[in-house]
Amino acid sequence: MPDVVLPVLDEAAALPALLAAMPPGYRPLVVDNGSTDGSADVARQLGATVVVEARRGFGSACWAGLSASAPDDGVVCFMDADGSLDPSELPRVARPVLDGRADLALGARRPSTSAAWPLHARAANAALAWELRRRTGVGLSDLGPMRAARRDQLVSLGIRDRRFGWPLEMVLRAAAAGWRLTEVDVAYRPRIGRSKVTGTVAGTLRTVADMTRALR
Image (cartoon, rainbow, N blue to C red; front, side, top):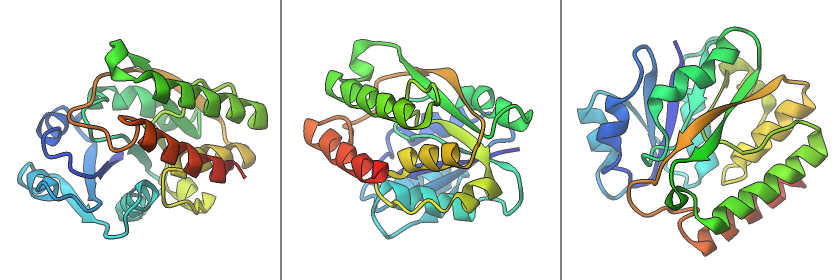
């Protein structure tokens, strides 16, 4: 069954509920990317495998988790560890890949409340999704942070970005390689704690800058 890469930066408050909700057979790989709140210790105490990635950056954490996943052609999932996504939906996202109907499945976020997705972040995501559709012809509505693909195929994509451009570069390279992409609707809830990315306008702008570089 799939490994689940969970990039973590100060998510100690969210990890207990998240790890408790992990579906049977899905192995959490918590990648600690410089937390100062004891996130790694919390994850270990709850039985999760912890990978420490000293190089800061969302893409660095994702790559470290992918590298630490089971070295075979199994499916690897990714999801944010801030409580905004429900791990019980992972099987729905992974199913098209497990069944051989898709090579990359993305969880398209559907907010449970307006507070779950700030307007500035939603607008930035919509603009990037539009640009992605224009460039690739793939009808995606969201650069969903919950996603699934086969491990060896992901490694072979050669994703270079180690910051916030990682998710976009993955989709761009997958589309260029002729992968079959699909979306599965998933619930999107208010995160636990303050976002380092979309919780502020400045964080959103940094993310957009990284993704703009990936588009080039």
